[in-house]
Image (tube, rainbow over all chains, first blue to last red; front, side, top):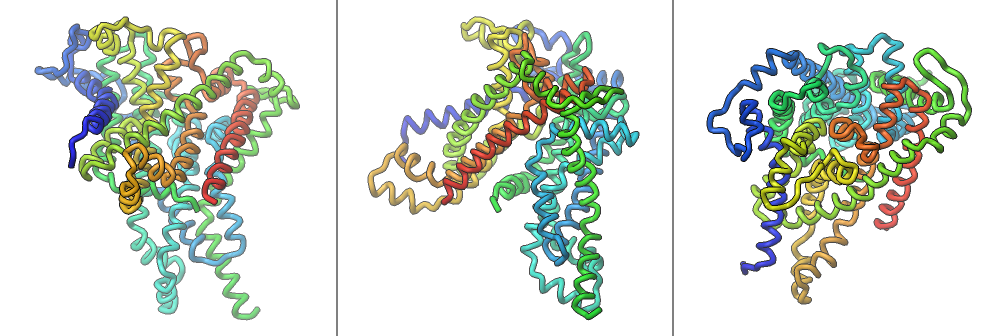
Length: 275
Length: 293
């Protein structure tokens, strides 16, 4: 290949942009291992040679961060479980069972994907208050699961179509009930699609700050992003603590992304296929 | 009852049993709130009052100065961020898809990072970077000999500072989409163009760009919809200030509903934004279908 100055310049430009994109994370990461004094030192310390865990221990001792982390995991996992189960059930029925009104119900559900969430916030909040679900796990979980559901149903139905119906017919001939088919065959065959759906739903639930902000009131019910964001609202902002918190909240997402990059690329491009 | 009618009945029952949980969640948490949102936008609703107001909320919105600023700002965000996102993503995607697979994946991951780690995390980090006194941004500026900036604290620079943070988070998904689309373009097109003596820029303009057109339009639609709904960045970075220079419709809606408990008025804002997004999306979808035929 010929070496061209133009190419080299453009390549450098992309690399510089990548550095700019990466820098905030690097800066937050190294800062979270600095002492309060080191954090404000000028010239800045680009790499702390004597890292301290003070910010992390301080965060754990002075805030409910352990509880917040538990809440985030619990809520996100519960949402993911519900969405995968319910989405899989409905996706199977929409693809493989011929029932009256199937198309109408399906397209009505898909249409709600276009419904922006913010329009629903006020009525949902009032509904939760009426049900007595304000500031509870149920209030955090159910509306979040419902909002992730239309995409899940769409994705699972598309995937179920690719499974040949003969497989199900053979099981029916052998006397398998519809639920038996679902439990034994469908769940086994849809694993790849379910994995992508699970990862997407988990990340989405973990990061859905706005609903959490509205539905949570007490400090003990806060999720991790909510708790960390709250630290910045205090009278004296302890930046070391905030940076340690952002790292704690970002880490699970980064790990999920690195471990399942393939599914992300697939999920994003799958969602883009216009039907 | 004959056998086929019995079979049909059985399918109907099993079908609805399978979709029942989905249907319940859908009706209670999506359909009901949607209708309720429209209904209460015609009411004056606060914590314990509810009174029919006709178009009162909408008339009040029309002369609400803060709402007008939020409305204009929201459009400004869309007009600045959406085109930049498309241009930046296609530029990066073209460059990185020419590299070897590992490097492509690495770059894709880096640009996707702000998106996956959430708006909360990156807003918190940037609000510290932007801090005029102790932030690293001003240190770097003065180090290369430029004057220090007020960043988020001045109405002159706050909008651009917020928009940049949002831009960093909005290019991740488009870059993934573009690299996938570019991977699907056959080499033969480029070889044919090379035979015709096309240079790099010519190849991009007459081969790449037309062939990724449907991806571009899809990115346009999803980015526009998400930028119209900006909230977290505003809440954490600026709280809408200084002097409302960064506020958005959603942020005003949030304040109206959950700080002032003026639910009817807030719902009217939601309905207005919904209509605006609907109209804009309609035209974008029309572009998509026109382009594909």
